[in-house]
Length: 235
Image (tube, rainbow, N blue to C red):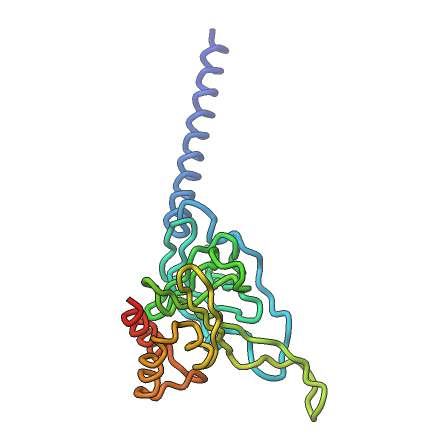
């Protein structure tokens, strides 16, 4: 009888210990979920490592510094993430710290990102226009007409001069207008005007001239206003 009682007490002690450990594990999971969300969608990328040591330039959007933006994956928002956008690779790099405050950089999984949104910019996944050969597009305007910009950098090898090595180009943009579900690329005034009916071109050309718009260095705001004006006269 004593052996039975002893065995029962021993078993009860093991169960209580296991329950206590389970509660500790659950609390750790809760802390992890609170910090990183209920899934690892955001952190499913691969480790980032610098592949090229250029003699000139860098591959990143704007500059080499981090920027803060909201990342949307599967309809879930991951706010205020620290990012860099590698224009040469067309990849977003996430900067974060682990539980021990150690810094890490991972390349986010391009396939699962819906959009990256900042205070004055929006990059969306290019899921609708296979003829535009870029995974992400910068949204310039989106109403009845839509206008996107593909932003890129190229890598060249400098084989002449005192210093030989790789160098990155300046940031380049390719523009696309979506009109009645058709994609029209444009870079200059003439290719932009060519998109529209002849009877509408005069008003568009007059608008461009009156505001002294130069397509070579057109700003997003100038282009947005131009597309909005063009949309009004097309209606």
